[in-house]
Length: 257
Image 1 (cartoon, rainbow, N blue to C red):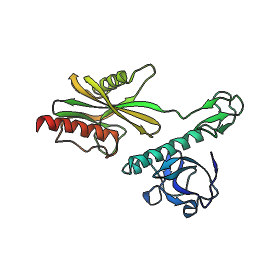
Image 2 (image 1 turned 60 degrees about the vertical axis):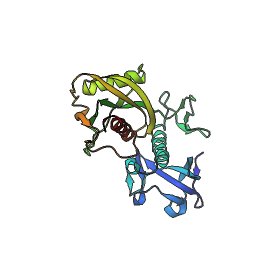
Image 3 (image 1 turned 180 degrees about the vertical axis):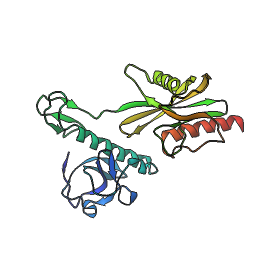
Image 4 (image 1 turned 120 degrees about the horizontal axis):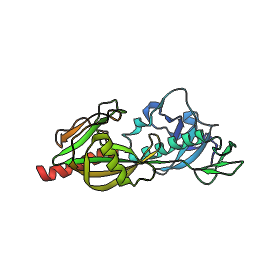
């Protein structure tokens, strides 16, 4: 439940607004609230990390507001907690009024939800399901440089599920739309909360079936087949894309070394 923060409150502090997070010293603040001049602000506990409370304060500081991506190299559990905070802050900011009747919203005291004071409609944070897939062709991986990635990395193909699709259909469609490749032997590997802005990434591996690469220029800058021991710049460790790539490299090594 949201309340006023006191100087004695302590833990991890997610201070966020408009999908930005406060990172003084490029780190997530940890310690007593008074140390970071947070006393008097409104906040709520959103979980625990290593036995300490993780607090959310929906607020913008004058300095050191940064992208959550700066925490990608932190422990995955801490990154997920910070991501939860950023997503909840944006949810509460964007749900001040009811979409049905325009009434003012109030925050639920028992769950992450907003309640309309007029028509009593209840809103929950929405999560967009998306897929990511690494495709293998003998000893090579299909990797692509996405339009939205300006740092030169090559990664797996990915995309959002559409209404009425299964995840398997989403993978098949996205691969065809972005690369013109047909796949087979699709198998699910794992999932990862991905707060950019509010997604749940479902990860798959697949094998090449047929077709020649022909990229969608609105989605990709480049794509190609890369031998497992001659890979381009890759996504950072801790991302599910990197795990998929490393898992596929391990499979190739076991067969081709």
